[in-house]
Image (cartoon, rainbow, N blue to C red):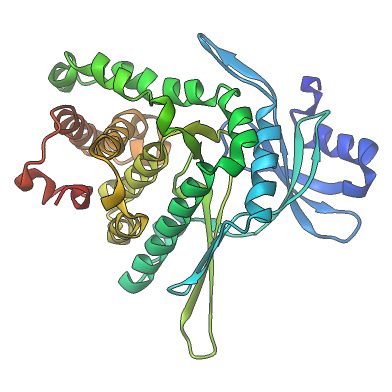
Amino acid sequence: MSSSLLSPKTLEDYLNEAHREWACTDLKALSGGVANLTCRGTLKADNTSVIIKHAEELSGEGWSFPATRAYDEQALLSELHDNQISIQESYGVRVSTPRLLAYFEDSHTQVIEDVEAVDLKAYLLSNSIEDSSAWAIGQAIGKWLRRFHEWGRSPDQTKLIRSLSENGNVLFKHNINYGRLESALEAYPDLYEVVREFLPIITDFSVPDDEEFGIVHGDFWCGNVLLSNSFTEEGASLWFLNVIDFEIAQVSLPSADLGQMLAELYLLYHFASRAEALEILSSILASYGTSTLSDDEKYRVVMNFGVHLIVWPPVTPSWKSCGEHKMKECVRFGVGTLGVAYNRSREPRFWSRHPLGQLFV
């Protein structure tokens, strides 16, 4: 499909002409996602609000991000729904994924259920959450993620694993994280010097071994967890979470998803003083079952966490606005975390003060 679908108006026209049963009105582009055009619109047939996602091919030096990722995402959403990979009201929290409503392979376009909720990052920045609710949310996220990863390693998913392993998303993910690590540190020569000698070793270690492969989300962070809540007749909170945006789902290690989510929660604490984010972080670690992770897996989680703190805050507007002192302290913490991971230290004094200390204490 040509690039003529790269605006809400042309995408709306395409649906109205080629797939009239999914014709929409008032398509509006949404933020988020990695490279898709994602819009919200209203179906003409019944006034239902839906999400329309259209993919185009992207490429760069040494990597490609094919439009066929849309096929993988829709297949994954269908499988998750058919296999009921959800957590039902664990501690008053339900975690699930939106339903795929339609997929048009000719244009790499999906129609997805609109759950109409706010993402977890935005919610935490605008609302206070009681410790008990924060803990419950973390418990449910950790349990869902563990179940998803176990499902993604199942022999029943061989066909999906094969398709995901060929889509190039692993290399894309590696390049936008470890591939930018050195350039991100160039802004802080003193910190770069701390890790310069072992940076190539860390980058190589980030590439997983074949026998550890399984399906992972690929972009598992607070912005891809939608949250809403209501109350029972007795006044107890009920939380509804939906995990979205599987466009860079890939065959990799669980540490990729864990490290990213834990880092993003820490950033909410570091830059925005949201203590609830640390409560959720700690609860995810407890409920995921990190005691079953090997030492290699634990140190990969730590490395992904540290790399994320170095690479992403300097290009995130909401964190850049917090000032250079806060930024350098974040990068410094990321560098220190990488050093400890490289040395495979289990020094109690370090881990007793670190947000990922539960991995080793």
